[in-house]
Length: 311
Image (cartoon, rainbow, N blue to C red; front, side, top):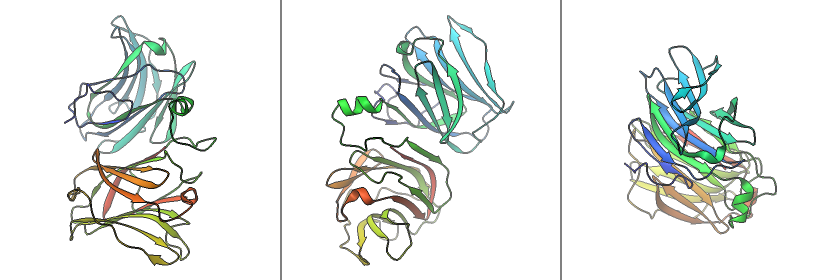
């Protein structure tokens, strides 16, 4: 278990008990906070809070399963202020979910599982917020604080499209799942896949392709293929109708039947870097060029996908 006292700006994975507190860097307009977790089957509520340095709550997001609604509110000097009740419940018990909180000049915008859900006007200066707090009937898989795009550029982030697409967040899609990359593939792109192999897996595949997967003329720029019988993760490319040389090196086999995993594919100028469960696993140098033409991600085989996020 990783301490919840670590910084969250680069993304942290946790599997904690309720009552987690994650420090945040200063919020500004354009900041995105992501929370990804799993709702317990007996949950009656859970909460996601933005806490200030004085222990006030600038925002509480509280799904309530006993009343089939989500309550948004704040707490000032120990007293709860008026509730904003949304009579809809965008999460289910015994299911994974993704919440995105976008900081805007006058309000927070809240999305569940990739769809806008509600807006909440600021009651506190956003600069006063310094922590994310999680409680209630859920387990936390991942949190991340992302600065605005212009700040990434100022910090020397790799080149991105002039108008980068909004982050993609998909929860619990069926397998196989194909995701279009609307602006192609570019250095700095991060693809996060969360899931678990089926109880009796043989193999699954994660492919990044030019062209819709399965067509005869489709090129596969990256093929990641965990094989449970061989205990190997094969990487390869399929170009002009031919598979290339397989790459099988890497750390010990990182997958187990039924066990959750997190994989991140980072696109760089000369390669794909693959991280599994927060450890670097492999580097695959580009064989297909230009990598900008890669326009689909496909996940298939003996895997239950819990989430896909692309940014």
